[in-house]
Length: 243
Image 1 (cartoon, one colour):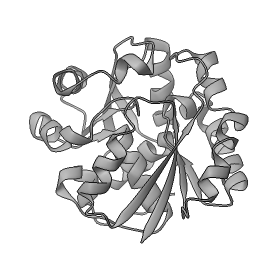
Image 2: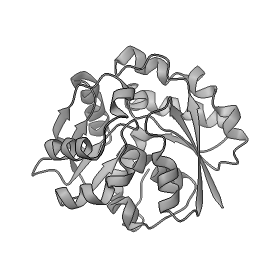
Image 3: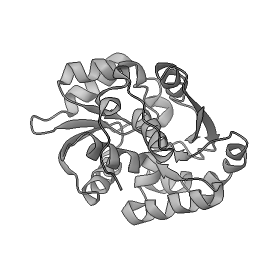
Image 4: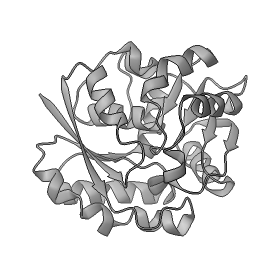
């Protein structure tokens, strides 16, 4: 059985992972290791500290005992905040520390957009304006056009973790744009695994969410494919070349 490791900051929406594991039929084990979040704030300085080598490295020892074949830093803002080049440095350091293929949720979004064949996206973010802007910049660096960016101004992951179905659907609806080929919800603190098919039915287009793409990225690193309609369009695609 394939085992994947995820370094997840703090406690907010980590229960998306066992839900996704069940939806995949138990064919893949998803090991979630919690890292110290430090200050819970969607603020650039706090996010840089959250994604620092020391904080990620602290979870690596537990990860080694999980039998994971790959590891993903399950935090979008704590990766894209470093910029395109800095985020590459971050995952290289994680791969060296873990001795495993490694990635992050930010790269998962960049690759997932290519996987579904999209080139123009809308961003529906829980973050403040400046942080949402950094995510859009990251996507642009990957070659993706951002046609609309919505920022909700939420400061803490703890607050985002309290959002339920109605708030998630409203976030996606309000962030959509007619020219967008997909809508991206970039926060691993947001519960979305239970609403993926409803989100896509509501908007009539693919929706990529943070914990969904994070699991997909772990599978990609491990060379596994899982087809599961309940996990959205991303999990129904034929293999694309992503690099």
